[in-house]
Amino acid sequence: MENKELVPGLCTMLGIEFPVIIAPMFLVSNEEMIIEALKSGITGAIPALNYRDTDALRNAIRKIKKEINGPFGINLIVNKSNFLYKEQLKICCEERVDFIITSLGSPEETIIEAHKTGVKVFCDVTDVKYAKKVEALGAAALIAVNKEAGGHAGNISFEKLIPELVKACGIPVISAGGIGTGDGIHKMIELGAAGVSMGSIFIASDEAGVSQEYKQACVDYGSKDIVMTTKLSGTPCTVINTPYVQKIGTSQNWLERLLNKNKRLKKWVKALVFMRGMKSLQKAAFSSTYKTVWCAGPSIEYVNSIRPIKEIVQQLQEEYNAK
Image 1 (spheres, one colour):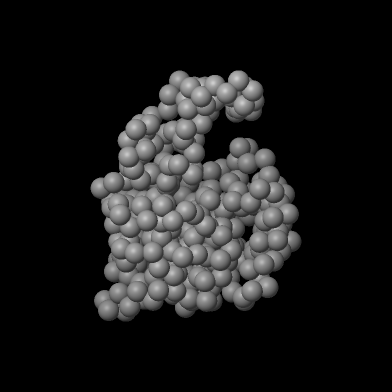
Image 2 (cartoon, one colour):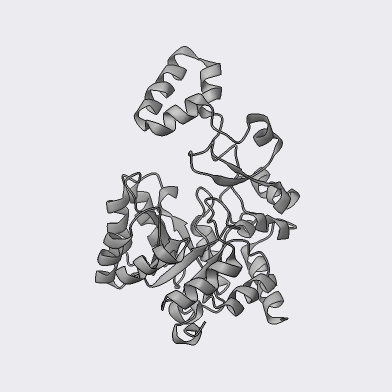
């Protein structure tokens, strides 16, 4: 890990007090979480797809900036499945968010456009090969998604992934996955990470934009209750193994597989369900949604109560400083 001291830590890069990003979480992250993160000396990011349209995205960015000064980011899906990508990127650059986190596609265009306005680009990576590609394109940092991550996880353990990336690349490595304590943050830093991206432990926060039932599930369940499902999008995703998930299963049925392959069919099936009241078809096609199936990672093991973000961060700092 010879280059550990040659790259800046996350605090230096972004001007924050504690090297933590609240990870962008689909349908969970919101402006309130970012504001409280900044007040607590850390930072966070919101998926652009959490907003129905680009005007809502722009308004959210402006709301945060009006409320508090501090660095925050937007997560962009940069492949063809995101029809709003180009407009979202334009807004991020025009509003000058501090950083963009790219996922699921080539970040080349994002990096080129972001650099014009001084916006940093952090790229999700799961292996050295892809990390070196995005570094060559001009990425400012790597989000090292390991196999303990919530949602769409990687395939490599953090013990292996972080040292490999630190050795192979000359830009900061931000570890993502399986972190729920200050001790866990300390371990990542010791391995050479510049900081960490943490999501699941912040789902059970007062500010998170999800139901109390979802938050309480993060308290009641633990790492052993996290399972992989393909029912939400066709891509394996980690979720809490609630009785509902056990009832519907974790593999796509024939109709879900069909609709996942041909998205255009989905609107016609919805129309048919609406017109005919076909409950069996509705159950087969649309029972699995992000409202009924709750994404989370193994780090919910460390969640014991629903608390304000301020308290969660304070505990992380105390545990970290005790090492």
